[in-house]
Length: 212
Image (cartoon, rainbow, N blue to C red; front, side, top):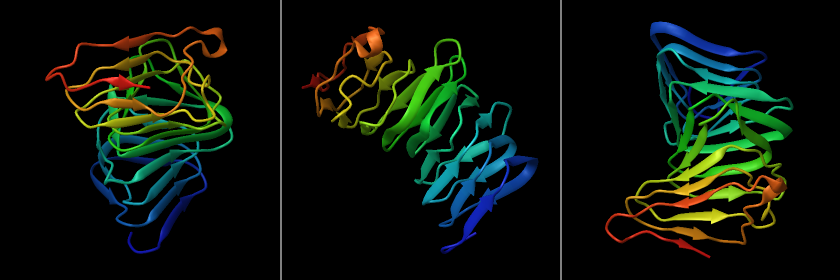
């Protein structure tokens, strides 16, 4: 796929053959159902890929983010289950007030921007995490949840909760090898009376800090 083409599926999309290679190039991919990768290689678009009802990558296969944006959308609650860690460039969660449940001990990792727009994110059991190495923005329309956030990597990061001061309900850990995390707004750690933890680890190179 290339140019301004759009791949639209009315149901789910699955890639499950070892020799299969899907390459979106600059096309838009809009999956109006779940995304399942069990074998083969999926090269995501450099633009935007929408997934409306579940993300499953638990057995095999390779997901390449291609420096694009993945948007979790749709109107209903759904789950993400991956092989320990799935790495995205940009990830947006926009579930219209419904919930994203991430499987136990799984991590959704972003190298670019993590944008929490609408809906909520929770742990299916325990140990699930958003890991951000770039900027994190929580919109005023976000509904909260218990999913933890780990700020990692060596780049400077901005954490912006303008209009959403009390809306991030998970534990927050800052554990970086360099750079700093700048808090661009007020942050209340007692969102919805969950009283999550704020954990700042020892930084190497004396290079990192959390600023307000």
